[in-house]
Length: 428
Image (cartoon, rainbow, N blue to C red):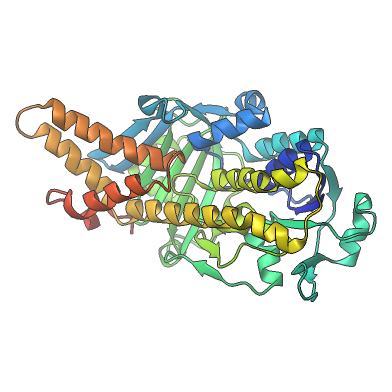
């Protein structure tokens, strides 16, 4: 089976490695563009089994920083933290923070080692116009750039172009856009004092918006995510805005204020965007090209690399039989992947909403107030542990779409807040 993957980021490279390892003839189009900084430097624990399956965990450990958990700093007097080891074995007890350029190169090298053919070219696609066959085709010059295609169209085109959404745009497929209108600026800093747990991801609520601090091996990634209107009032350039927030926020100024910025300031927008359709005859979208949620809780790389695993699983029976299915048969085989990916994206959107509207913080605070009030009780402690475990299972990626976890959070978010108003803990 001839498969063309457009985009050599984590989703594309992971899929290329898995499919080539199963014997597919994989062409991986790489336009060679590598920004200095990319969002997605902190991995969720659910990615650890994927790294092990690819055989790259040791390399990732060498370039990355062990991440033991997450801390949410919601105010000077209220914070809550999780260590993944507390919920093991249901959750892997650790994960990693990674410098994205090096991480992406590890995955790309794995794809090439598995036998994927890398083509340094910017691929173009267009509607095929053929009734009853593939909806999408590679442009003639793109086919010509990949000698291993032998001048023929691939049996399947995989769009792994991220937010570009190459296939969706070519076919005029609309996308759902989330309710927030945020802008993110971030950069790397050196020589920052760090009093938190080594490697711990810290999410911090700002007066408007929120920030992240991600410890890497020798640097600290510091980012702010703020509504477009509020961000515009902070300055005219990304560097001015980021610097002003660091200088004026007591928590960030203590950490990043003494540090030295050693990169340019990167900017990202439009975090919530999900395609109305992510596959069709002869093509399928992977990772951000299907949909991306938000940097809050770091789901992006997991959704991208896990989508690659699901696509590889759907194509596995054809590859093992050395079969060359029709475009329609491939689309039918990938329907389950489409349903799962849509469900996962919706579950992450739902979970992130709990943080933005204050319900998650209110739930945690209400539970801890309940434990501290009155006589200590094993039942209270066990109940709170169970609740926090369900939250951890969702936020770790292990059971994000679990109906039980989601249902419990809905129940507690509506009836278990014990008088705490979520809006007082919301992110503006």
